[in-house]
Image 1: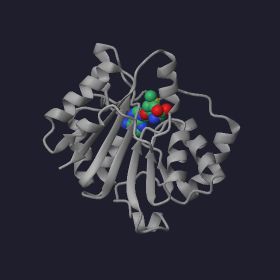
Image 2 (image 1 turned 60 degrees about the horizontal axis):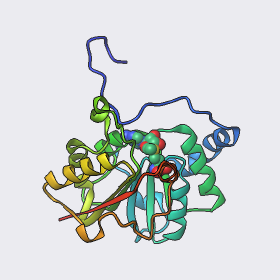
Image 3 (image 1 turned 135 degrees about the vertical axis):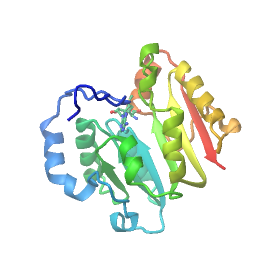
Length: 227
Ligand SMILES: C[S@@+](CC[C@H](N)C(=O)[O-])C[C@H]1O[C@@H](n2cnc3c(N)ncnc32)[C@H](O)[C@@H]1O
């Protein structure tokens, strides 16, 4: 509990009391033991979590309702995925999708990605990090809440292997410029100019993307590689 004079941390999300359906609540109650890795202070032992020890390792931050995440994991059985999300209905929804598709290469951490990277992810471990449609926080006074900031890049960068990639997609032009600027200023991440703004074939349309496209937005896929 924060004391009155302590500063509240600036978070990239606001937890809204979204409706949790019975199906989602049941999934959380019954399926978490199989597919949710509890948040903690110890590094995750990926070999214990997944049957395929030789698989590549990818973390997705902010999977929303998780439909895209499940689809990608189903198509890429040679990759072990961990999805991070704070939104409880999304966690319940993805648990149901994992069970329905009998996925053994996807697990969830129901927690703030910032804290997960602080304590649970080893260095030089990940082949990639996916961040699809992070909340744009488009009002100027809210820019400080944007997930993609220099401090966040510094936090996740050590977890990537050399030549590992960071894939961020957004449908907000102003956020796209902001992200490109942050990566350009960041020593060690190299923007892939040739693949700039072209959606890679492994990424299906996400829920937020469809909403953005409906509003007439363009979409930018921003890829960078750790050098
Ligand atoms: C705009 S939604 C996009 C969801 C999904 N990727 C899509 O494209 O449909 C952003 C998601 O990121 C999650 N999120 C924001 N900050 C987060 C954080 N620090 N850790 C984990 N999840 C976060 C939010 O709860 C939300 O579900």
